[in-house]
Image 1 (cartoon, rainbow, N blue to C red):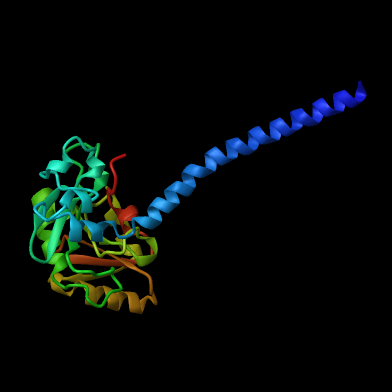
Image 2: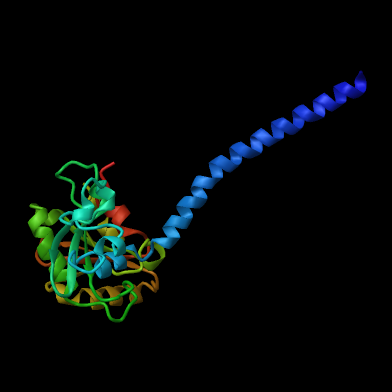
Length: 239
């Protein structure tokens, strides 16, 4: 009788441990899947500019994972699975960031992306005119000029390896903190990269991002920081 009781207790212990292990696996699997998806999608923006802009390209729907809204294969797709193009030229395309999906119409988050392969702020091929173009696009979407913020995040805190400028609004009260960060004042957006590099060098920053916004006294603030400037100072999401 005692032997049977011992067997039953061991069996129950085994079943209990197995149930705990299965529950842990269920909890862990989604996070592993998320990490894998994030790893595989670091070139998602590059795929958009290379495979999703020309809806007349051969086998467009097979090659583009997030088709343009006006393409036949975008019908009945979720907002996150489509590309909304705001403007495009031979060198750039401005699109809606997927963070706008499900948000009110007054929330703005766009991306300006070069069509050429340029990894990010550290790439010597970064184009000087991209800031002026981003500002012009932002003015069409954000009525209050002193609320406009253009951001490129540091290489260490970005999710994409294709240069892109975030077109967003400054967070309320963000300007109060500008005295605490490295910044300079410019009158011409063509010199943003060089001004930012000088500020970063002076602060001994190797991994840094750039934020550009209006200087209320005239011209523009160029702010550099090793932290994620998008999340620190802007309305980067609506939720």
